[in-house]
Length: 159
Image (cartoon, rainbow, N blue to C red):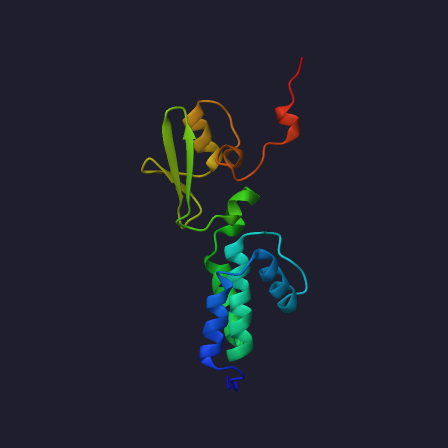
C-alpha cells in the first residue's frame, strides 16, 4: 500500500509522547475528534492506546484491507473466546494475574493462553472453581476476584 506522509515523524512522536501526561478530560476531547462514540471502558491506558493508534493511522495509513481480513480470520481460528462461559472472563488476556487476599493468604491466579486459569501450579476451567477451592463454599469467581460486583439480590439479608 502506498501512502503519502502528511506529518513529520518528529511531530507524530511528540504527539504520542504527550498523551501520557494529558489530563483525562483532554484525552476525552481528543477521543471525540477521532471516534463517533466513547468506549464502554474508562481505562486510561485503553483510551491512550486507541488514540495513539488513530494518530499513527492518520499519519502513516491504516492496515491494508486484505491484511486486516486475514488477521481477523487468524484471530477467530485461534481464539478461545467463544469457549469462555463467563462474559467477565472474556476481558482477561493470557498472562493476566488476579490477586485476592482471603484469610491469611494471598491467592494468585494467572490466565492461561487456552482460556483456563492457573492456581498453585494447577489448571482450572473457571474462576468459580478456584473460588470454591479457596473458600470451601460456592462462590462466583468473577465476584470473588473483583471482576464483577455482587448483585443486590445476593446481598440482601433475609430476616
